[in-house]
Length: 371
Image (cartoon, rainbow, N blue to C red):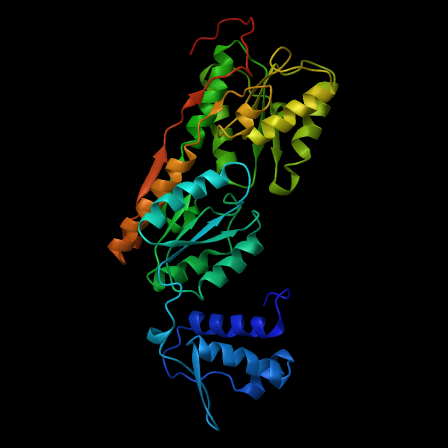
């Protein structure tokens, strides 16, 4: 139970979760007041407060001298009868507000309300959120997965959604174990396109910076490698920088500083995992007295606000943020109409990459490379 909540609220969440996860039916018996007080070391007053609220909300009913029982769920108040849970890794910055805006444009038009959550890309937070939404009368879920490149411990929660007939669609990435519905970008294709652009500008010594704990990072890396191979450019292990979610604010800059202060041939261009990393890398280069694109060319990914707000206008891959949000909501409605067939016949959409050329990368002299 979440310890930052009042004790009675923690107890309420435990009881609701217990009812949902065990698929209890109307009139099934629940814990007695004495059992709950002993189990959680709570006062009888605290237990009664939790049970009073659950009874008022239609989750339970009590018979004096007999016990506490599950109520008929059909009479639970319909305050959240047309809610859609939207779970993203972040909410207030980068590309996420515009994705959420696109989702909201479709949902509100159809009379639905968003229950918005963010995981901060933490697996434990995703678990808490999934447990929470299991207690609500939601009609569907739109979710951006947390650390999608790692083996996941949260798969059982999606099986619970399936058992309850609640459809879900992933956005930006997905958990491959589930074979779910999703809408994503062609991240490998995007990684190829931005790297090929640098190669066509004459760059051969190209540094790549990629995120290791989500599928977007792995696939953009694959595209980077494929472009180097296709153009016959030697792949250098010391030209590849990996970082995790927890390292994103420090490691890319630290590694750029180390590489450009070191001896030997310096990269003339850098492929960055996304625009946010690109801006931080540009800052690190400036601290070293280097300029973009005169000394080093930079490309990003996502065509975020970062790409145009600074004096360096980033060449980047377009992320159709609002459109992907709208598409995710529209697909979710289709899945809701399909009922249980939604899990047998997933809908998958992969958006092809589009390169937005600006001024952060320049042409240099280099020997012609034939494909």
